[in-house]
Image 1 (cartoon, helix red, strand yellow):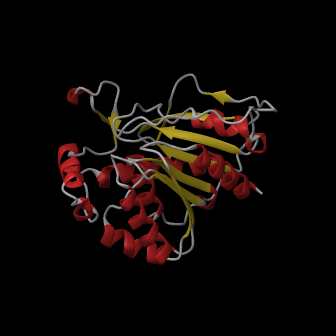
Image 2 (tube, one colour; image 1 turned 90 degrees about the vertical axis):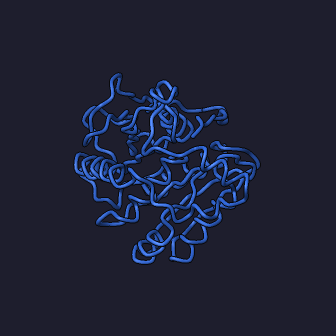
Image 3 (cartoon, helix red, strand yellow; image 1 turned 135 degrees about the vertical axis):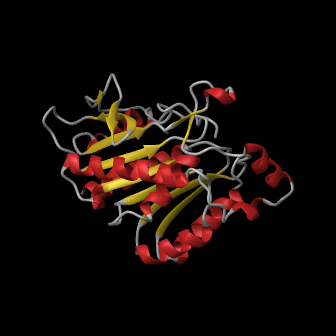
Amino acid sequence: MVRQSFRRWRRIEKKVRMSIDPKPRQIGNLSCQIVDALPADGKPQLVVILCHGFGAPGTDLVGLGPELLGANPNLGDKVRFIFPAAPLSLDEMGMYGGRAWWHLDVEKMMLAIERGEFRNLRNDYPDGLDEARRLLTDVTLEAAAEAGLPLSKVVLGGFSQGSMLAVDVGLRLPEPPAALCVLSGSLLCEQKWRELASARGPLPILQSHGRQDPILPFEAAGWLRDLLTEAGMQVDFVPFDGMHTIPLEALQKMSALLEGLTD
């Protein structure tokens, strides 16, 4: 919904050689940026797919790849990051360069927050979610096949709207992914997600949310955390004093999570 900001990590003591494709690649039917530090003929041990939020450009989260690889060289020859661009352009709305996974009624959301009625939106099933799910599922399956990896070696995540799509896809894949990273997300499709989560089984989840988030209220992150925890998920919840963004602690936790998944 708003472009997140990144704070610089600690001083990097060991540099890694990494590649960022100069041009996006088509995976499935989405344009994707790929970042890794693998040898030219190398194969990753883990694929991480991260989806940007509503209104951001498709490249919005790409900086996370160098951040994580640079700060944790142990990931360098093991992890491939993939950053898909959402299918919908928001140029006609005056958000030039901005993209969306599905269209939002922002006025309706802001009014619900103002009236204290955001809870009423938690079972919404957005128009366009089905198509967005299909597109991201295709990216996930193709990326895993190309790397020669099972879905249990694919991490799905994202920021804001992108994180909610990652949850929806992660709960529906034919096999559980390695983990989910839910950065400033919220609860959608409550009834369906509760049913899917209960059938999914244990799954590591990193979730972060700002206590002063004016876009997706902090309370809504708690609803999502509770639903996932009650379904048996292993949720590492990272609250922070801040707004609609990604904090340093979440990046550090993500780095540790990814390293653990490549051991």
